[in-house]
Amino acid sequence: MPALNRVQLIGRLGREPESKFTPTGKKVAHFSLAVSNRWKDADGKMKEYTEWVNIEAWGRLGEICQQYLHKGSLIYLEGRLKTDKYEDKGETKYYTKVVALLMQMLDRKPEEEPVATVEEEQAEYEA
Image (cartoon, rainbow, N blue to C red; front, side, top):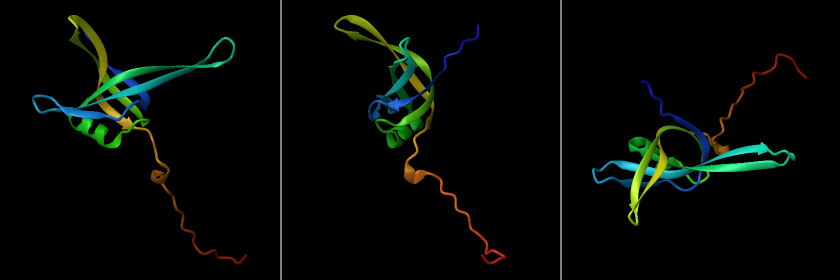
């Protein structure tokens, strides 16, 4: 039976990425992503709901996230859902996160905007 586990998100980082190494020496970065949904209610008032998603990026992708992303950065992210469990005061708890597979930065700083210049040739006529 075929299966699909794919998530696509566009949102802003809620905190700076934090990196650490696993006991086996692999690098992983963790950060949260705020994904907002806006709509008008029956009275015409704008409403907004923000979903907070925990993100985990491994290896080179994690290094890139650590180096280039900051709190508030707008990104597109593709990944897969993963549920982990842990013990808290004798009780088993579960939490779901997204393991990043692809990330694209959507922010552009004004100084990074492409600049197009046009060189004009001398006119063949006089004004």
